Image (cartoon, rainbow, N blue to C red; front, side, top):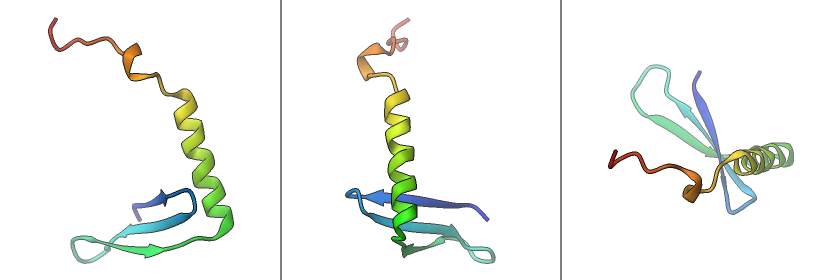
Length: 62
């Protein structure tokens, strides 16, 4: 089942799950400390591996 975990303000998490039978999704506040720590680590890891915007070549004009 597709889902996502959103970390807001460094300590509030929301679990969002696609509805199985109907369109749309359900979102619940979910803040176990292990989940908050995991989400924070994933964001830190992604930010560390990301290139700053000015390092990307602008190919729109070429």
